[in-house]
Length: 109
Image (cartoon, rainbow, N blue to C red):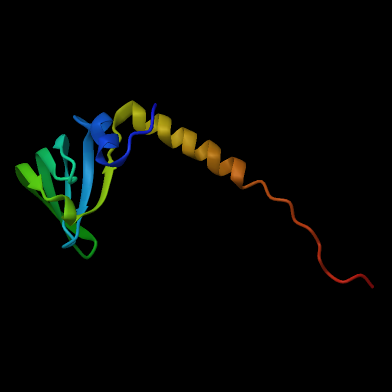
C-alpha cells in the first residue's frame, strides 16, 4: 500500500462501512460513497445513533452529505470474518506487550 497525502488516502475506503463522529456530537454509520479534497463525505444507508445514558436509538437517514469541517472522527467498521481476524491480531499484539521485565531497584544493604 502506497501512502497518499490528504483525503486521497480515503479512496481505498470507498464502499466500506464507516462510523463518523460529528462536531455536534452526532454519531453516524453508513457506507462511504464519495469524498472530495475538502473531506466532504457522502454516506449511503446512513443510520444516526442517539445515546441517552446507557440506552440508544437508531434513526435511518439514508443518503447523508457531511461537510468535511464537521468530521471529528472517521473509522471503518469491520464486519464478519475481517472483524475476527483483526481481533485475533490485536489480541496477539497485546499479549506480546504484556511480557514485562521487573527490575529490583531497592537500595542494597
